[in-house]
Image (cartoon, rainbow, N blue to C red; front, side, top):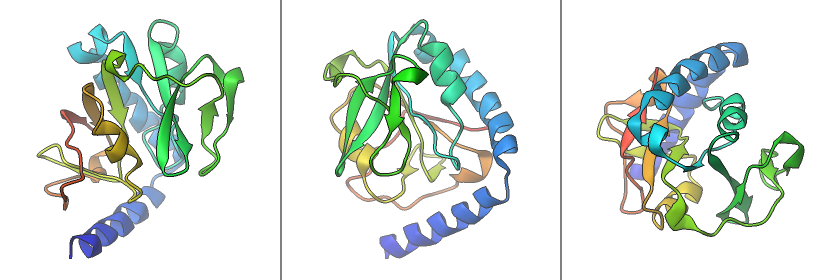
Length: 179
């Protein structure tokens, strides 16, 4: 039952994302990320886990590059069914990821999870109770369950729903930022 509902929501959100051009997503992403920059949790964070966006997500590449100059920026890298973490050291350090073709840092693994102050988390949909629904592979849920950092979900306004179906493995966000 929950799986069917998640599939339906993923389909609806995917269709809505297709209606928005990459240029428009980039403009809207800038507004979302400006809100992130205003948060005291972000301002005080020394080590942040961000993500290099896929085309249908809140666009983060400029944000990653800008903040890597003053914060330690960690990016997730797909490794089988898990996410490894690596320090972002610049665009020239990125290689194509194994599963989704997302650029990923090629440097050494980052294992000091307790040092991560804030995590920017993408998702397919979020709800007003800070629940997150991902793409269904549980990459983030597995990783987030072992981290104590402030979890900040980011999404376009049409991805913020009244309610998303959850199960015991789904990790709640501390806050959601949309347009």
